[in-house]
Image 1: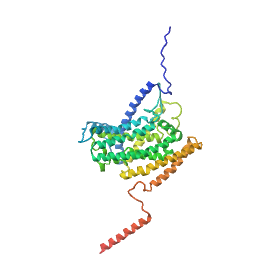
Image 2 (image 1 turned 45 degrees about the vertical axis):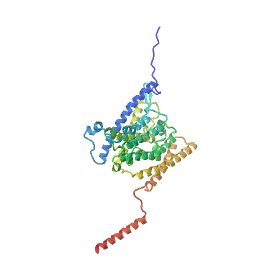
Image 3 (image 1 turned 30 degrees about the horizontal axis):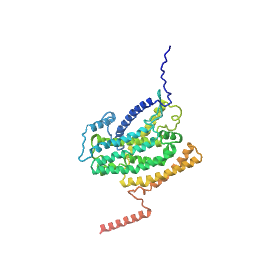
Image 4 (image 1 turned 30 degrees about the vertical axis):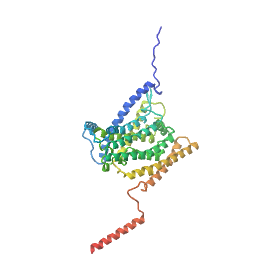
Length: 427
């Protein structure tokens, strides 16, 4: 009698994997992605120093390792070896906890961002996202808003007036710009019809990038992202000329390093969100090959490369802006958030919702024609917005435009004073 043999049947590479394989794949993705993420955060500091040196016609770090690439390791070892100091009268538990609270939300937000097309394996199809939550978009808004607690706690627990002022500035700034950022992303959901980030990527593959279809929303999101990450020109919470070092004045060694690390982590996460929501995510432009047909290893690799390229370009844009623009005054910063961006976002949501409803009622399918109409509408809106903002009257400017009559009157006054001065000298 022939005994039955156990035949192991592997799932089809295009089908979802079993529960066990899914759990193992998730752990592997966590280790690999967050390792790449942390290395990227470390070397974004190196990129900042090299790009700023290039802009200012300097050499930058170039002594440790070939072209200075080991400078990051040297800085990390130095910070680990430095002495940890605890000033008098600090709230020690919160003082130690604050740097971690500032860093963890940025890392958690990355978990739901898709970074490539699905990868076929012998054990089934593996989605290139750590956690493909059906509410991934809402998860990013909820978690990313928690980072402000670390900054506020750092300022309060330091028992230092400058640190406290920096923490209060940061909380006011983030609350002011989070609302505009959230309202700008509502338009993305109106087009995608779903809060899954993978669905947002697929919608852009069919209709075009939201940066062109929702230009005003992308403009608002970009400005709010700079404010949320405390980057120039919105780095008022750590204004060295006013608040010494802001909320991390009393920190030293590795606890101090956690705040710059969290800033760069937030910068990379915001860049990934900008790429996903408005620039197609992992979608390769000018081709449908990566979005149609069966999943392949080549598609997964190329789409991951496209996503990484977009994120790197946005990080370089952050760095470029830092070494190009001056810092806002605090009243300008708050005016921009409440008087300009928030009303603009509210009106824009109404306009886009009405336009999408009208196009759907007219029977226009979500496709090239739908996208062309939205592009034309946003071109007109962006032109009007830039024209209005260029007038220099809405953001509490440090200068004012003079009409021709006032200029002529001032010139006449200056001429009269020069004549009087000449007579006085001759006398």
